[in-house]
Image 1 (tube, one colour):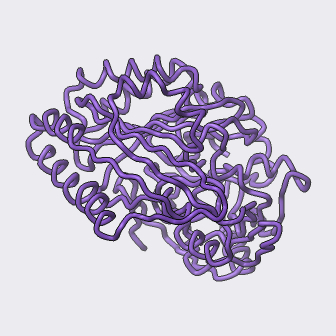
Image 2: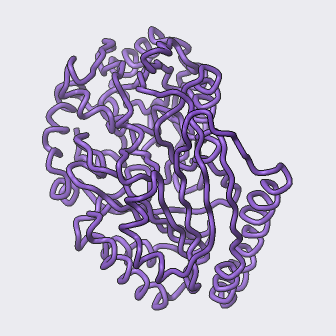
Image 3: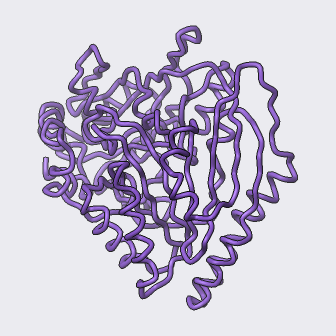
Length: 434
């Protein structure tokens, strides 16, 4: 029996068996044995989801031995990658090929299969989440068969599996539509929150990638604008010293120290939040895209994130600002706001609508339940959809009303996994029992 925990410590499990396949045949064999014995199986990923989506009560599958790029057509930008590959490894291998992902989130610890299965996304009003960059998937189904799906081959399975929650089968490989490597210019600076909110729609539309962080109790937001540079532009990265001071010292060591102080003495959280908001620094640089997208996160936290219709952002954010000061326990972590374009993936949080994402956080070990529940109530009024890998309490009955293709997903699930081999307690709640 192996004890498993996710990154944030919000989910644990003690699977009875851990399968460690190193090829597709071994994946199929492990699934076949589990199914034949009436056991359930969950792929572990990297454990970076805050929910118990990967928690295995019977069999777990560790894909850390199944990594790397399997094939690449550099001219077409089509890259097939093994499912256990982390985004960090993928970015490095794509870089060596002169290729890049069109868009990324700011964390690269996830496996590529885990990231797409939970709906991981970055920011960009004209861009979708990672799953929109998928050209094809290879899955191993509950009966051990290996199938491929794409927009042209088994399109319903493709529409479901691109954000499949690991409920349809074990992803073996992912074929991504990549593009030639490119540079991003990065502009990060503090700005008055009121000014950011007033210009939000303009800022989101005129920048390739736009987001901001609001520090509760402070008047400023940290605003990030990332934009593509023309081919042939000169790379102007941060100096090693500037990078170390701004990211490691300020955003990890110093900020972590403030959070620990606030956890020990809660009455200091509000003045510390105002202090953090007032000392935000500015920086401008340009670098290879993935080096700009990704930021090291050394301070542990818990997180809840919902996608809302983009036009509802101002009302929702106003309610959140009014709610935070009323909490019994103060909030030590900033709120992150991003945007994404509508897509057609059945369980994507941006399905059918241009979306704004609001992510709230709390420093690990500090009370968060009142905060997260209140936030869920606020976004629920506008049909908010929770990120599948981040904390929420919604069940299948509620989620069905928020996803137009929810029952289509369940139909495909019933077809490919009629006995519920790939379910667990979390999926039983959000999808209903198989």
